[in-house]
Length: 277
Image 1 (tube, one colour):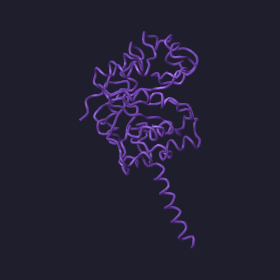
Image 2 (image 1 turned 90 degrees about the vertical axis):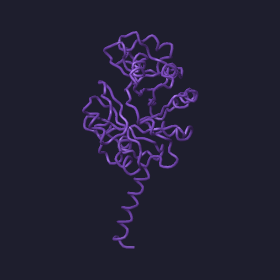
Image 3 (image 1 turned 90 degrees about the horizontal axis):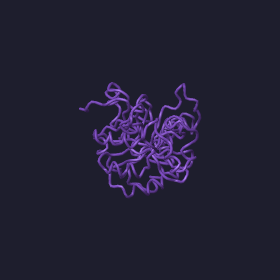
Image 4 (image 1 turned 30 degrees about the vertical axis):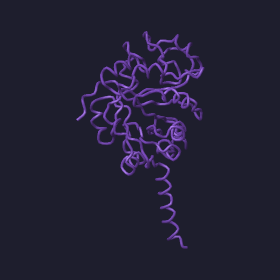
């Protein structure tokens, strides 16, 4: 076999391998249409300068009352209680040193959110508050290969009757749902990690940016930074594989209008969206 045959065969093989790697779930997909009927308030309908800081009970109350879906973050306290908090560290929101995982749930109750009367809520209490009135996008915050938050939070969610889906930047967390709760809508979070100001430029982040680890989790949707809609893998998942495409995080009405060309679901922050067409 001459090089004239070997080269095109090799190119075709690489392309097929690439498509297999990024392919989302294509067989027996759960219904994602109900999730497309909502706008999602990022960490609740919050403002960190008011009495409704991010990921607070007050912010979630405001989102529910305004008729918005909610995006929220879940991680574990030191004593393995699922709590709703975004950052790994407490510094930005609570003004104290250490990580969420350094403190028990009881200890975390001693810290206020952005100087308000709001405290870090338990995941179970947020679910009780929402009570199925609006859909939830639940992001699992994980560290490296530790995905212990998944089974703990899932045990709570199995008793919840509201509509929800899960997502994570960590493909291992999304893969956990593929293996253990396959009927739940699951999403892969991603960003253009190799942008100039980001020091995280290695093979792992290259793989995450281009969704090359989708073969582990076969997600139902791709949640991507709306500022980078033209990343090839994201576009192929949406156009070729017909996967649901979620935009994060929209911060103005103009950004929302521009994102409509490339996404179906929108997570917003810092403004009140006008009603969609």
